[in-house]
Length: 159
Image 1 (cartoon, rainbow, N blue to C red):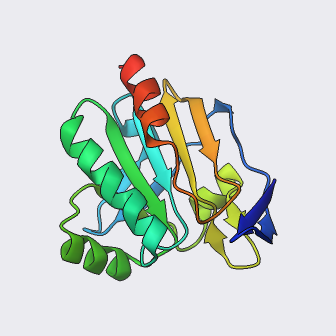
Image 2 (cartoon, helix red, strand yellow):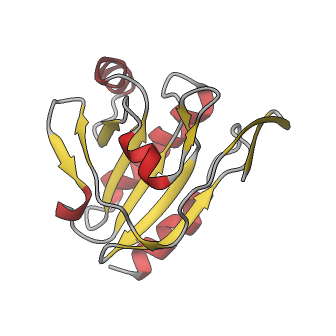
């Protein structure tokens, strides 16, 4: 899959889009380990390249608001940013949802989302239930926002 940035070819990835969701454990900005298989279903995973950019900020703030309004859905946000970068951004923006650091690309490699040219994760959203990917959206244009409503609708239908 070709990933573009401002309609220019940026990188190429081979993401997982269906089937078994690879299990992973990452650390949040409070130094707490979070494991996918230990979360309650359904789970929405929001993946973004860099929390300090406009679209990534919009995406994270939107899912933070949805997490506050949908306590029966587990929400995760994942980027390559350091724990300190994430903690500082979340504190400044008033974001209190679970934001996980994938500095070593452990999650990114499992899901085929690492853009090797930049060492960033491709913007994407997954909905997981019973360990299965029931919805995925991998954005081919880095500057586009995901279809929030579609992911939320699918998660709500699978509570």
